Image 1 (cartoon, helix red, strand yellow):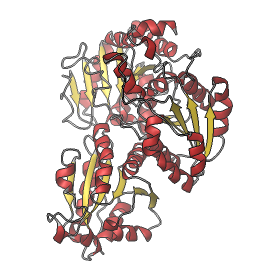
Image 2 (image 1 turned 45 degrees about the vertical axis):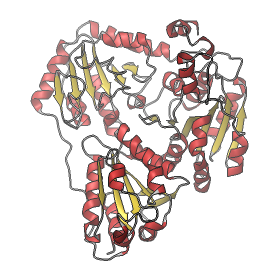
Image 3 (image 1 turned 90 degrees about the vertical axis):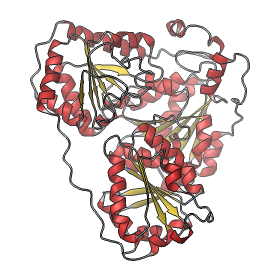
Image 4 (image 1 turned 180 degrees about the vertical axis):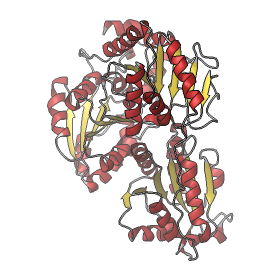
Amino acid sequence: MTGAEALVAGLHAHGVDRVFCVAGESYLALLDALYGIAAIDVVTCRHEGSAGFMAIADAKLTGRAGVCLVHRGPGATNASIAVHAAAQDATPLVLLVGHVETRQIGRDAFQELDCVRMFSGLAKAVWVVHDPADAPELLARAFRAAESGTPGPAVLALPEDVLARSGAAAALAPAPEEPLAPAQPAVERILALLAEARRPLLLAGGRLASRDGRDALLACSERHSLPVATSNKHQDVFDNRHAHYAGHLHNTTRPRQLETFDRADLVLAVGTRLDEVTTRGGRFPRAPVPDQPLVHVYPDPGRLGAVHRPTLALACDPVELVRALARRPPARLHPERLAWIEELHAIETRNAQWDGAWADDGVVVGDVVATLERLTQGEAVVIVDSGTFTSWVYRYFRFARSGTLLGISSSAMGFGVPAAVASALRVRDVPTVAVVGDGGFLMNGGELATAVARRLPLVVVVSNNGSYGTIRLHQERAYPGRCIATDLVNPDFALLAEAYGAGGETVSAREELEPVLAAALGSGGPVVVDVATSLSWVTPYERIETVSEPIEALDGRR
């Protein structure tokens, strides 16, 4: 086999059924090898950054490493945003980069890029394949690096001549690996802590996002009467309508809710790294020494105790841990436990009730989100790009058991439309809806062409407030009345969508929302809904014109 043929055989052996790419002459042999294997769908993208975002979204949906193929130099640098995002998000990504011929390496060849130097600070591992015989081994190592421990990106640079040369070894399938079960004494200790706790809280992270993980989490919560809060951008791992749902920890979680969480007398952090946003910068659980006993369960021992000092640190498969707990009989509950569960859920339920609101400068995003939630009943893949509008989604969209939230921890703009393409390719039993800002849409909105080419049933809702809203809000706080570089002049997004061959709709009043969104969801094809949204009411908790007022006072006047 050639090096390219060995790599494609290796992708197939690792269960890869879809790759995302922007074609480049540096890896023509690899593209040719992919031509001969129908089992791998090659998705032609319009920008390497969005191809990488698609691979990240696909990884989140499958639980396996997403794969992205890019050209050397410009292609690799464009794709670096996805490498950074995958690292910050703990999402497995394998980036295959075409490279100059081996004899040209280090000679400042056309579009040459030293991938090892470029990506060594971003990726978990970077390799250059110098011999086709090494291709299967290095590909297997890349997948292992991407998917093991704390998941993340791995990069493989592929010199053009190595891809074309023969002499490659046979493909290597991934080594069989059993999930790392928790040690029995550790399970017993957790059960003892639960027996003593009056107000425990289970903080569930993204490593429980699989269907098995969600089912095991639900069984554990119900078995031991455990309220469940979710980590940043993983609101969907637990049914938001369930009586045990306690809320979502993210960058706008309310102080009152955090103060209630503070009263917990035991925190089980399962499947979360306890990252900065989830913990609100070490606010909850408190860092470095939590205010209550902390059990931290994560597969990577390097993450345990890195910031928070746990009472018990357990390096194992989080799904196996909640499954083991669900199999054990519950201890006798303290009478305060049920009241604690009811209190937490009541706070979250009140928080999620949208009563409607008017603004003089556009539709309030809360109306958009509440309408989507009502039309889908929480059964949808909802993708959030980056922007202040995401706080409305977190507050007013209640995810059902079949619902999925896709977002990235780095909050990189431009994720929304590419992720919607990846979702619509993978998921057909529930609708795919991307909620993006006008700024983020124009970063990677060109992937509408990919959606049209594939005739994908997705809806893109654009919150069009004519501003980089997040930065504008920060400017108003720090330099009131001195805003610069945040005003946007936008095209007509509905007409732009039609130019691509997609459907385009415009909403300028709240009464238009339901019929337009209902028609878009039922259209069966890519549709962009351009909503003229309020800039003044920038989040559920702050308005631009009253940004200096206490947030809680504003919330109380809603």
